[in-house]
Amino acid sequence: VNRGDRTPRGRAELDGTRNVLFDLDGCLWFGSRLAPGSAELVAYLRGSGIGVFFLTNASGAGSTELAVRLSRLGLPASPAEVVSPLTVLPRHPLFQRSRRVLTLGKPALADLLRAAGHVPVEEATEAEVVVVGNDIGLRFGDFSGALAALDAGAELLALNLDARVPVEDGGFICGTGAIVAAIRSGSGAVPQVVGKPSPVFFRTALETFGIPADGTVMVGDTPETDVAGGRAAGLKTVLVGRRSSGPRPDLGVPDLPTLLELFKQARGVVAV
Ligand SMILES: [Mg+2]
Image (cartoon, rainbow, N blue to C red; front, side, top):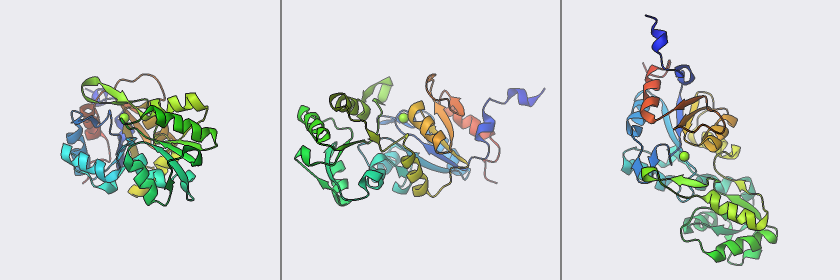
């Protein structure tokens, strides 16, 4: 019997992995529930000496809050191991000097920018940058204000462009991308994006984690963000789930338990 015949396809794509970046929504968790097999996979990788980090487009929480949430759900994490758009926002090229900013998002968004030396404004037409995140408290007037700011020359910056956020039981909630699409429709403004697939986001994440692109694998459920952005940053990419459209990953798996089995068979992964 040729044992090679029974080797699951894709093993070679994981050979020599030193670090893994995990997407959160729709990958490691769905709303308030961990995806099946996520704790086992993360524990196996860490036990094998692989660096495990978390790279999410979640627009409503920073590294500290996300690390607490991960830890409570059973995936121990420190803030230094988590990067989200709020983490990277103050370092975005649009914020290299002090800016007057109109924010559509949770109060933490304006607080973060104020702490970084920028000036949240109430009068929309005074804004130089309109920053958009997810916020169930958004009102009609917020959209009108954004249009007024953009008409007056402000730049449009989205924390992400994800149209939906997957939650429990196959459901979803409206994502930042759908909010941005409404603003774009009303203004004609073309948004820049802070999170995945932005090259700035991946570059900042690798710097923050102190790891190289070589030997690093991005694992996520969205071809347009996790795969496209990861590949552009020089990472190997793994797509979890059964999406058939969009950029093709180096490796596709139906679920995390399958990915765990493939890691167990990869060369150069298990620490001696
Ligand atoms: Mg995702």
